[in-house]
Length: 274
Image (cartoon, rainbow, N blue to C red; front, side):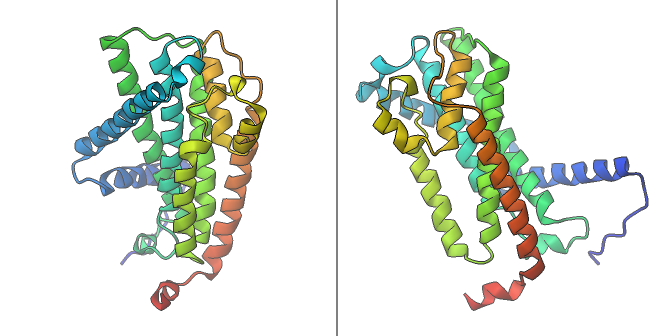
């Protein structure tokens, strides 16, 4: 019934077929949380907007505004929030993607890699839409914004997403072996990133002992580097682009190897004993 009968074709046609499957998997992920697609996207925008407002008032109350970079303070807040949201949403989406024992894998063309790509693409789409809508609203209603190097800023946004995808792939691969542990680690990573991402800090003005606590986190580097691209008068001195790139690629490769190994051994009966 669910057997897929492949049709002989060129590698290009098979590539387009795979992209079509990824697209439909992404749409399914977007509609999974809410039956109304438009309402689901609106809720993503509202969630990001609430996060921006909360962070703005927290930094005002804690007196962190005086240590922020010279420039638009709201843009400074949004740069941290958008990178943070993109990163943790990618971790959550990919780590919760359907694995090899999912009923969806009974359909011939479907496989875990397409499921991962669909979840990652859906997460990226939601966060890009939310960031674009909020930035346009702020630009049109409050004050015009100016980004010094928008291409570099977009690159850091995508790097935050890619590092989240890599970490999510590792967590997804260990989920069939230890689902409780994978769930706990995912939750811990999301909560720790509230502080360890450094979205409330200006790294150049942060003492070395504080930087040493956050330097392991790739998100800490991408947020600081993005502010270097956004603001003309800020140049990151203690973070790099190379580190999050290496972490992201390493996590993606480890995740792929673990997923391939798990796929050879996993059985639907594993969950029956729990």
